Image (tube, rainbow, N blue to C red; front, side, top):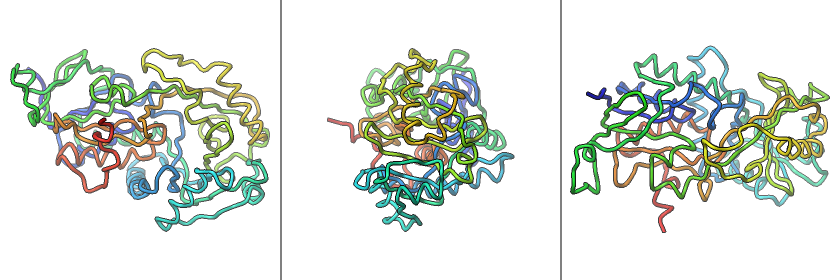
Length: 390
């Protein structure tokens, strides 16, 4: 006999932990399954700090979701014994005509966000750790900052437990199927709305609904995403500043910077030694999530150190740490938030493309809506699965 639940969630990282917490808070009997520890450092929800920013060059349509995410992070923090969201302000900088700079300003204008446009000299006067080219400009938005990702996951799991959820770590999902398929329905219902059965390396469980938030492993459970989701190796560095005061939270906003060889991002010193930064899409290495070079290399370090020496010289002291994580990219770098057309009782959250963690609190709310109602009041049309159909 299989244990029976209302909803099962596969993957209890940033997105899955939020989903389990929202479901449990609504009185749902929910099971979360995680193949590794909670939290862990094998996926996309670790690393001591993740940027939170309301100025959103990617697309102004993200801003309402960010505003709701901020509300939910603040609410979650009230019930947790450690700070989750650290506000430092955010900087988007680059050449005056860069897409990053103009997109950031546009998102602020469209949504009435407070912001300032600063010259490179004005930015350095305010935050001496920045040493950008004279012609560069910056958009400063005061509400930005960073999240502590491991703490966020722990806080969501604690809230889920308090509301009665069951969460099982170190239990790897092997497969799932609908109960109709499990019963051997030869006709194969093309719009199946029955329950699901999930098999792990420990046991089997059944539920009315299923949510898949398995990060870089999601395509293993959703065949239609096999050619859509591309896991990518990412590396960040932590270097000890030679001028430590310039890189503390009081003087060093989180940032995104467009330079000739790509877009970089970074943080003040927090929790562990060193000023942390990385390059989006690092060395553009598509990988299999269980078979890639997890140990950072000297080539990784050289790429990142060269950048720091050029744009943040007072932060380019001895190396304190290098760390890998995974991006899971979609072709357009927008998320996937939808139910499966052939199995509407199954909701999927995936493809967060290196900029998703800040949304985890509201993504959990959206996925809970999709699991229970099949729809949500949020406008998630840009995240629909059918946009990838040929």
